[in-house]
Length: 117
Length: 116
Image (cartoon, rainbow over all chains, first blue to last red; front, side):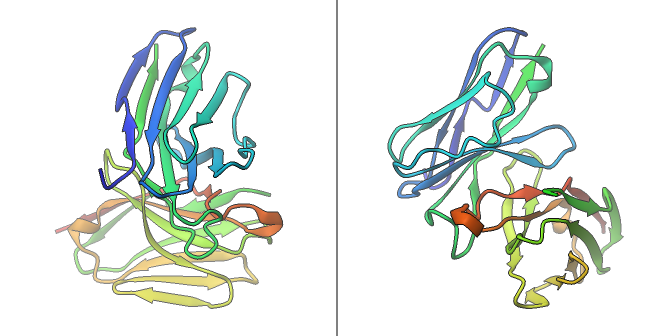
């Protein structure tokens, strides 16, 4: 596809369960970002991958959150032992410019809506 | 110091009117200021962006005004249309220290409704 693809689009889980969210970036985009958007709030940065460099994990809210990326391809965000406060839309974005130095433009997917009961 | 404060939370404008959304930041290292537009059920999309070497940038009906000394920037939508009804987010980032400009700090968002 032409855009960033995320799955699942909706996920309902029970408190304490683990969830995996997937992001397929735009082909050729070297940088990939995960953001969290709580209801009525702005986006919060979670993690950033750039090529083979160590990811910038500075936005991950707790050690229950982790993410992986295979090369310059798919990324998976994992939330272990989910809590109700994890309920949010998780957005993935990619860009062709590693640092976004030229345009800074991020291309976002439509997000995965997570509801923790 | 990383916050970006956005106002108003919601805005109702008549078709043809001017919509104005304001943002203020604290981190003087920020040197990239984009605005993103988000429609319900969609991801945000870049609308317009400015760097601090200019005080204003215009693209069609959308204008960013930037006041470096006040650490404020605003989005003006001229001749607002019902199709502009969406949530607008200001954001800021810095490339200092090799950080990615894509590591954005977002405002809380403004829900804009343009009545026909």
